[in-house]
Image (cartoon, rainbow, N blue to C red; front, side, top):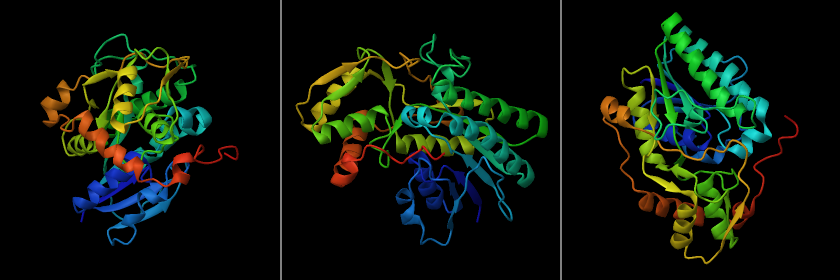
Length: 325
């Protein structure tokens, strides 16, 4: 049985990856320090013999006994609310955490896939974004803690690949949505869904003309899995190229939920990208991958998930107290 280590395993993306690798017959070691993850996302896997959970911070020394075939490094705060509250932890998990896991990959001769992001392109001057575009990022802006952590992650991963011969993969993940997202994590899909379900007006930052492209979780996981199993070592975009404005998206949510809330507008946060759309030509060519789930279909599934949450979860404003970190 092949063995895979998944960091950030109790998070949104990490937990779905655990499901996929269990389904594929792997032995899964799930690792998370639970700063932004939640055990309820993976508790259904605890009874399985080919699943184990390690409560550990990857910025500290990582030791995995025995053989290891694959590592997927998905540990990181991934929403603006989180990484603006815990900026130093965000920088550390992208730098020290990546360094530690590359060391494990080198020692075990394991293949490692690191989760980068469309944020490496910053507020792009090229549209749509190809992997060859080097980005427009402010290293000292408030979002720089996430953007630069991921850019460093890519740099050190390629250095380990070239200098030490470590078998590496880099995925640049664009906006992804699905079940297990936290309603209070600040990202647009759960934010709009939560506001609609609570009967609140939908908050759009800026004038709503900024664009995003939303990829359903099942499509994202399929792209990541195909990349891991491929021979391609350069960064590759995985996302949905069907772009929409935030205003149009808010109107879609109001229509889907059958609510009659207004859209209210607030000032745009600093360094918030105005356009975001992946060029997925490379993923199509190299991986034979493209998204299959339409936004309408995916949003219906997500709406059913959020509707199933308890009233307490719907009203929850804070994930946890970060003041002690």
